[in-house]
Image (cartoon, rainbow, N blue to C red):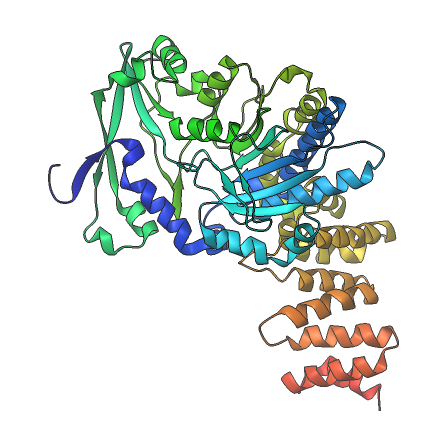
Length: 517
C-alpha cells in the first residue's frame, strides 16, 4: 500500500466485485432501467427462440434415449430482468404444444440470481403467473461463488447433489463476464498473478457503487504464483496450454465460473448442458498478447469472458463444445454438452447449427444496429420482415411505430393484415419491465389508423386503464371514435365527454359530440 487511497489486491479479491454485488442487490430490477445494464442483446425474442429450439432438441434427444419420465430442470443463472427466461419458456411451450405427437420428458424452468429483490419481482410479475400455476416455473436465489444447492421458493423444495436424474440444462447469458475472475500473466513460459492496484477516489466509502467503480483508477503489477503450475491445481492442463501457446499475455481465468459449473454438475447424476452468450472469446488467438483488462462500465461493469478455458477444461473431461466457426462481433453464443456420449445428441447439435451457426443472435444484432440507423428509409415490407425475424419484438415495434404510421397511406390490405397479426403475436409474449413502455398505446394508434376499430379499442382502453398518468384527450377521442364506429354510442359519448373535460376546445371531440344531439 502506497497511501491511504491506493491499495493492491489479488484481482479476484478486489473490492470491485463486492461493489458489483452491492449494485445489483440495492437496485434490483431497476438496474435495467434505460438499458443502464444492457439486456436487449441477450434477452430479445430472437435469442430466446434460438435457445428454446436447442432446449427442444435436447428434450427430443432425451426422449430418444427413453428418458421421458423424470423432469428436465432448466436453470438460468443471473436471470436479471427476467425477460430472457420468460421468452424462452413462452417459445418452448409453443414448440411443445405444436408437436403434441412427439414424446418429451416434462420440464421446469428455474430462474435464479444473487439479489433476492429480483427473485421476489419475478414471482410477482403478471406474465409469470400462468407458468407458475402450471408448475413449469420456479425461482431461487443462487450465489455462484459459494452455493452448492438450489432452494426453490415456489415449490419450497431444495435440489441437492445427486437429486436430479436428468442432465441439468444451464442457461448463462451475460453471466461469466460479471463474476469474480483470476487475472494471470504469461511471460517467458512463466505464470504470474497479475494483481490490481486501485487508486480510490476521495471519500469513496460515501459513493454509490456505480460512482465508486467509475472513479477508481486501476493499474496492474505481476508477481510469480507457483500454485497454477502445481500438479494439484485442478486446471493445470489449460494453464500448461497457455504456457506453451502464449507469450506476454494477460488472461482472465474463470476459476469461479469453472467451480460454479462443477458444483452445479454435482446436482445431477447425468451431467449438464450449458447454453451461454457473452462478450467472450473461445479462440486462443484472441488471448495472444492480450493487454490488461478494461472494465466496461454500465452502472455495474463487465469483462470479456474466457470461453476458451471453459471449452478446454470440459473437452478434456469428455464434453462436446460448440462455438461459432465464424468470428463474432457483438456476442458469442456457445453450447457445452458435458454428457455421456455427447455426439449422440443429434437434435441438439442440429438446432445449434440452424439457429446459432447459420444465422444467430450475433448476426441479428449486427443487422439491428443497421436498422436502427436506417429505419426512416425502410419500406413497410422491410420493417415487417425484420420484425418477423426478431420474433415480433416489442422494443422494435415501439421504435418503428412512427415509421409504420407514416407508411400506412400506401399500405395494401395484405400488409395491414400482417401488421394486425404481428401486433397480436407481439402482445401475447410482451414482458413488462420496470421501465415501462406504453406498448398498448402505440399498438392501438396504429390499428386506429388502419380503421380496425375493435382491435384499436382493446389496446387504447388497455393503455388508459394501466397508465398511471392522466389520459391524453386525443387518446380518449380515438376511443370515442372506435366506440362510435362499433355502434357503442353510450361508451362513445362517455369518452367524448372525458376528452372535453381535459380539453374543452378539442375540435374533433366537439364535432363528435354534436352527433349525439
